[in-house]
Structures are given as C-alpha cells and as structure tokens.
Image (cartoon, rainbow, N blue to C red):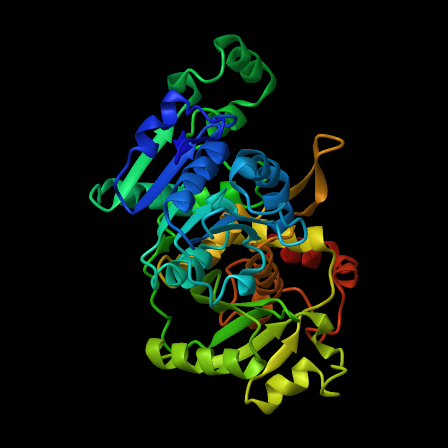
Length: 446
C-alpha cells in the first residue's frame, strides 16, 4: 500500500485484501492469533489519514500500556516516511505531513476520549473492553466528522465482540464483517498449528485459532456456572416477587467505577432484577438512579449491602460513605470482611440458586462471564488473584450480594437451618468459618 507515491513498506496479506477494499463505514473482524490484524488495521488507518488532511484518528486497546506494547512500534515504523516530526513518545502520537494525527489510547481511561472529534477509530481486542465504551464514548466521538470504526479481536465466548459480528452480518450495507480462522487463512503453517494443538488445551485452541465462540473463556471464574444458568433458562425475563423488598449490593469505587446489583432473596432463590454501573459520579447520582429504577420496576427497597471499608471516613468530607448513603435516605449494611477467594467461591456456590433478568442485567452478566484470573507471563500460569479490569467492579458487587443473601431471605429453605450471623456485618468470614459444622455447611452452600 502506498499513498501519494510514498512507499510505506506494507504488502497486505490475502486475508485482509477484501477488508482494505471495503466501502462500508463500519467493520468488525474476528481473527485468529498472529493473523496480523493489528498491522492491517493500523495500515488501513494510516492510508485513510494520508488521504484526509487534518484528520484525527485513534487506536484504542483495552489498556494504555497494552496499546503501547502492541501497536506503538508498528505505527512508528510504518509512518516514518510521512511524519513531520519525531513520534511523540509521551503522548503516543504521530503527526503526518498533511496535518493528520494518529494517537494511541487505553479503554481503561475513557475520560481521555470524551469530547474528542474523530475521523476514524480502531478498537483492538474489543472483547476485553467495557461494553459501554463503544456506545457511550467512541460512537459519539465519530458523529461530528462522520467518522468510521473498525472493531477487531480474538473471540472470548459469545460476548460483545461476537454479538457485534452477528449484528453486522445482518447489515451488510453498513458493516463489513469477517471471521478469519487459522485453518482457512493459510497464514500460519500447518506444522505450527499442529504443534500449538498438541500444547494447548482443546478450549484454548478453539478460542485462539478456530475463533469458536462456544469455547469457554480460559481462566474465567464463573463461566461454567453461567453457562449452566443459560441452559437452565435462569437468564431470562425476571419479574419482581410481589411483597418482597429489593436489596442492593454495591462495589463503591473511589475515583473508579461503582457497580450495583438489585436483587430479591426469597426462599431458596435469588432474583437479580437489575444492574447499574457508572464512573466518577457522586453517591447522590447512584441514589437517584436507584430511585428511577425503583419507579420503573415498581419495587420497594430494603437494605444496601456495601463493603466493610465503606465505614472509612473521607478526607474531603469527614464522613463515611455509610453515613453519606444514610443521609441520602438509603439503608447501608456492612458486608463482613472476607478473603477475596472465599468471596469468589461464595459466588460460584450461589449461582445455581440465581435468576437474572437478561436485559436489565446485560452488562453485569457480561462482566461476570469475563471475570478471570490474572495470567503471569513469567511463570506462564494463572495467579490466585483476579485480573483487575472493567469486569472487577460488577464481580466485587456480586461477591457482596452472595455473602449477604441468606441474612435477608424471606422464607426458610426446606431442610436448612440458617447459620447464626449474630448481627450481620459484625463478623468476618473467618469467624463464620469457626461456627458449628452444620452452620458452616449452610454458609458454604450460600
């Protein structure tokens, strides 16, 4: 590819020729590992940028450091013949001879993207991004200039990347769509694929090289339980149980996202009615949103279950967040302190009892599906700690929900003797585990 007779040193692979020739405004590509999707999309963006003087373009990866490690060297190398000055290393930006600019961003800091006017965007590894990034941040940034977008990645279950591909197939006038499987592209030699198949698990190979959306997300904590809930029809339209108060479970972020689940505990089941998450808002915002949801669903609220550190006083206001919520008319209750992995296990054990409203909990469910263990690149093994990304807040709030639900169940479970919490919120998880064996078994079932 060359623009204005300036050679850029790029020869597209056959699998991407059709993509470069597309005429649609939008594109989504699911590609196997090492297919060269990042290079192809960056060169496509560079070509567009050189054809539009003064254009503004953005490459976005899930994390800023990831954008730098994956795309920055490629962008500098291929754009070198058409730069006006040296690449800006501190801002990960290149300025082209016609006044156009290409910048790299991380989806983990969406505030940097708000207010931009863009002519084109690449969203790389879209499956690892917050579902709200595209609709609420990136798409509005393309409106003024009628910009285009390319969404790319490797499949991780039937999440937003696969869903966007499915939607794109239904709109061929507006969307270019493609799935590039390793067995079909010919990019990787057969002996390389055969060796990868011997080393990797069947699920890993199916996801990474066959682009199979049915393959489980490797390292996911709740994938099996949520798949079972889907098969059992427990992710569906869920109506509130009449006469049962709706409680909430919060993960309270400071300068970060706050996530809230709305649920009813009734007998032996939990009805999860809604999920809400936002970023950088005061507690009054979330209270107002809960009021609006309550009016829409026709529900009455009970308690608000918050993490035990919500009783720490703010240096700015001198009040705890518990006090602030109480002043706003809510009923905050502290969830017992517990070890992180114990809380994750509590979610696993509780999920078989849970029903989710598919539409109202859509983003929260996607977070739970993708919540997974951190991978240690040095040891090539998963750590005993979860990866901290956009899924963390909803998953943490789910932990608090699953630690709280037995205390507020409206009716006993047949054959069960509820554990004695001695004033919920005053015991740590370790203290609960020191209870009698029968009560401990009851707690572990939760």
